[in-house]
Image (cartoon, rainbow, N blue to C red):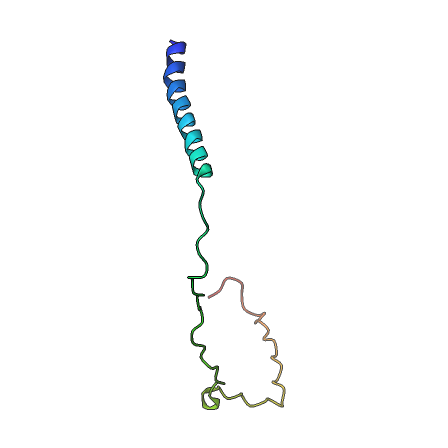
Length: 88
C-alpha cells in the first residue's frame, strides 16, 4: 500500500515540476525588446501649484489680557474636631 500512495503522489508532482521548468526555460529564452522610449511623454504630477496666502488677521483669536497681580493663595479649611464620629 505505501508504494501505491507514493506513486499516486510522486507522479503528479514530477509532471508539475517538469512543466514549470519548461515554462521557466521558455520565458527566459524569449527575446524581448525594450520599449521605444522616444514615443513616451513625461508624466506631470503637478500641473498647477496654488499660491500660499497668509492667514487673514481678522480671523485670528485675540490674546487674553496679561495678568499682573498674583491670585491669593487658598487657605486650608480645617475639619470640625468636635463632631462625633459616625454622627449624621
